Image (tube, rainbow, N blue to C red; front, side, top):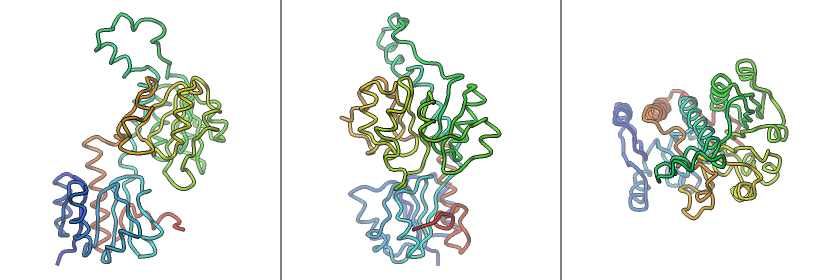
Length: 325
């Protein structure tokens, strides 16, 4: 008899076909208030779940006595209570690496669009204000030969450093929990303290996971260290930044602009001051959102799921490779 799994996010049919070769699949394209009771009913005898964004904590796990594996279709796993999962002997997996290049493309897009004010000027041209855009007050900032500071030199940070170094002749500073020898050798990246990075960088890019240690890592103190001409980029998690401090820094002119793919609350509230600022480029958390990459992420999650349920080691097993307190 096939083991029962729940897929609670829309995925390509090829992913479902792969899972259905070995598992009985209950499929929800998305979870909402209407189908959540049905999800909980199906969860009672499910051995695995696959999706993203669902908060998997003690209260949910108490309703899933048969669960053996939880598979996130994302790099981040701040939605998972790893301590609780590990204590219950439940595997947790994520989908790192396969999205590095795509997210790095998004980050470079935010750097370019904020520096050169592309969304703002696009709207002016479409509004028939072409001639007025040639005035100096509409000029942007150069990107090439500037200093890029990367906070979190993991796989995505390294992919950004590669683009910045070879494509834009940028000097790379980075701050990380440990030195990244490859980034230093290949891209000329220089390891430095957080304070020095903030003071020297023209562009500050945050690429850290959300943990208790990184929540509100960037706040009032950090923005004060930055140059007035600095541009802040966040494609990690919204809660890594003190959003109130960011709003103040932008509004008061402490920093020049920001490019954001993530927010403290998502979906972002329509009255969030960041959405009305002309010096902010805002995206709806779409760093990895290309068809090709999302398919790779879903297939990796499916591979983790099937491997774990067949008694094999999932390729990207989280609570087997990090210290869980």
